[in-house]
Amino acid sequence: MKDSYYKQYYDLERNNWWFVARKEILRSQLKRILGNRKNLKILNVGAAFGATTVMLQEFGEVCSVEYSKECCDFVNEKLNLNFVHGSITELPYKDNQFDLACAFDVVEHVDEDQLAVDELHRVCKSGGYIFTTVPAFKSLWSEHDDINEHKRRYTMKNFTRLFNNKSSIVFKSYFNSFLFLPVAAYRLVATAFKRKAKKKELRSDFNKIENSFATNILYRIFKSENRLLRKKIRFPIGLSIMVIAKKQ
Image (cartoon, rainbow, N blue to C red; front, side):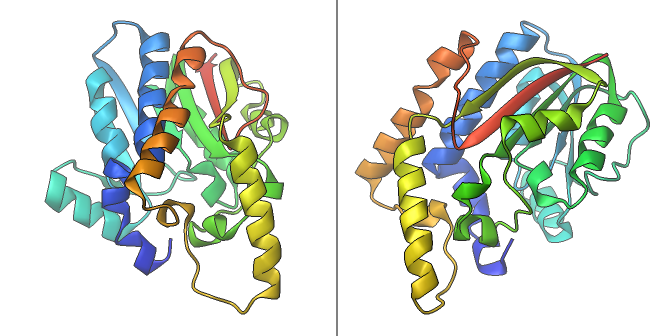
């Protein structure tokens, strides 16, 4: 993540329409699969600035891993969350430690994505859950991916292939689907024009819409998918992918 963008991320995680709607969708899926279980041992990998860790604390004790040492130090000082500095490809935990292992928009950041998913399985207990999300479709690659230092975007087929036979997938779906067509059209057009224009400073999608009325509309559209996802209705296309697997 670029330094200039990195400094904005703490507030983005808590206030940006995309982060807030995504967090509500993730929480709803967790409540659906976990029921009333509240004393779980949970791993949150790529915990960034702690918003998802705070959300996960509703379900039990959370251990958070973050690759950025600067981010760990900031969060530990500001929020007292006791983040651990580490990598998803070499998790600092023994086998079979966690009831739930989460990696929300993390796997796309590493070269060895198979190893990353294998590590989530390794530290998860038998019968425990692995919950992951990633961005979808290489054709939607934009400066948003560049500034976030993504290595790739996925299709459902090539992402679920990483789970091999180590777990059974209990739910998978694209999401952020209602906004797929306008966002896809915007990114394709913007990328085409950018190739012809002089190189400018990269800007994330999160920083391109600042009007409060527009962001409120986007939030409501994204969040509205929650009603269908709660009923285990799967979207055939979307800007992101979610996969929930149960370790065998």
